Structure formats: C-alpha cells, structure tokens
Image 1 (cartoon, rainbow, N blue to C red):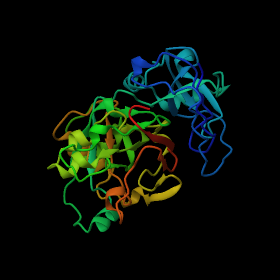
Image 2: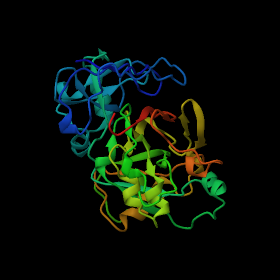
Image 3: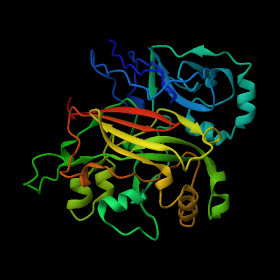
Image 4: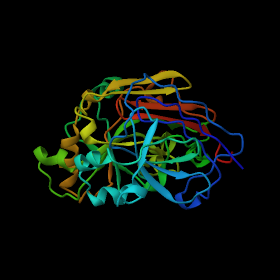
Length: 352
C-alpha cells in the first residue's frame, strides 16, 4: 500500500515529500488512502540556499514508525537528520527543552552529513503535542476595519486543544457536528479559516517584562485557525467547541528559529481557497505585538517550552466576506507566511 504526497521544493523550506505505508495511529494522523495524492505546492519564488539551517521538521521514514527530527535548507532540497547525528531528541518539544545553542548547532552542521530530502518521508506537524495553544481574537487593524469594530484596548484570548493539531499537508475534516443541529435553517456547516503567525515558546516563563518577552521565543511557524462558526458564534459563544475539533489546527511544515526571522513584525501573510486569494496582509498590521501578548499571558499563567501563541488573523475570513464564504468538502486551503513556509490542506468529508 502506497499513497503519495508531493510537496514542491521552494523558498519556504518545503521539499518533495511522499507517504509510504507506516503505522501512524500513535500520532493521531490518518494515512492517506491509496491513490489519494495531493497535487504539488506551487512556490512563490525560488532561491539558491541549499545548506540546512535552523528550520526544523518532524517526519517518519517510509515503512518506519519512529519520529525523527531534521534541519532543512531554505529551498527544501537538503537536510541533516539531527536525531541520528547528535544528542538532539527526535521529538521537537523535547528538543526545545534541551535548549541547544543555535550558533553552535549551525557551526557543527558544517561537519555533519548533508543528504537529499528523499521522496519517501511522511511529514508530521513540526510540534504535535503542544502543552497550550492560545489564540488572540481581533488582532489586526484591517480586521477591525472589515468588521467595523473599534480597535480593542486589550487582547482577548481563546484556547484550542492540542488534539486539533494536524500537519501542513493533512486533510481538514468537515465534521458533521460542526453544524449545530438545533439550527434547522442552516443547510451547510459554517467552517471558517484564518491564517496566523504562530509563536513557539522556548523557555519556561512567568511575569515576563515586555522588554524581555522576545527572549522567551524559540521560533515561528504557520497555523490555520479553523473554526466552526455555528458553535463559535450562533449558539451564544461556544468558542472552545467551535475551535477545537480534530484537524482544526493545521501547523507547519517547519518551525523556523527566531534567528532566521530578523523582523517578525514585517512578514506578508496570505490565504488562498481553491486558488482564489482570500487574505493578503502583513504582520506589521498586528495591534498587539508578540512581546505584548507574551507579557500579558505570563501575568496569568506559566508559559512552557513548546506552547504556541496564535497571534491573530488578518481581514478576509469567510464569515465577513459579502456574501459569506465558508469551507466545504473538496476545497483546497493554501496558507503562506513570508520566510516561514506554506501549507496546503484539503477539506474532506469526515467519513472519506
């Protein structure tokens, strides 16, 4: 049994990756069905960076069940498997807790074996079991304009459970329960999207002053905040239920260390649905910057290595388009953030 996923090599750290039979149930990822291959991801542009940097992926080799950790080059052609060549843990969360010096790791990588990214790797989310996933609502100026709302004075937070995490090429399941059965006038589920810059916490921290907050960051990745609007809005605000269904938090495919993102507050962010551009903004439009979010959250709770903060989504989500335009089975959702990569998720029937 063999099913393939083709991921075109591009500037954002993706490589041509394929799925071969492996027991993945322990990671909560369904193997793709025979002959159900996704199409190639179209790159935004090419570059000439070939040496692996601190851009981390988790994967499984074909026919294997062991999770592995690697650094990949910016064009996705080359990799260094850290879990077999260093003392690095094969699990990204544990690797973050090991607190490797990135400068030393990069220097050492010059003497490590660099291999081609093979066609038989199963790409996993870059971190598959974060302790906390905390999102912030209405955190872009263009979102306020779109909704005709006042700019909030303080961030409003919500949570998603880690069982909602899925990979950069995995399917999003249009769960039937996403449609509120008591709302008989709704003929379809109202599943919405929202591309977000995701911050990965690197150190355990509490009561962090704002000037020190960025020192608590390990790196960045891409997330899609998938939401069942039926439950999130129409039934009196069941935000937790509407955001935490299985597969409702695609992540990846790489975690890019903060040293490779010199200006995180100036990255373009885009979403396409079936090739149509839905979101096109820049992280400079965030109302509450990352240091503010970490500072505020750490006043109430301890942030731990591997925790993820979703920093908000810009204008263009389906609920606020005219007319509204929600996701349905068969749709192809593409999410992209400058320097961080690109995801490609297909929406499917939950029983497909």
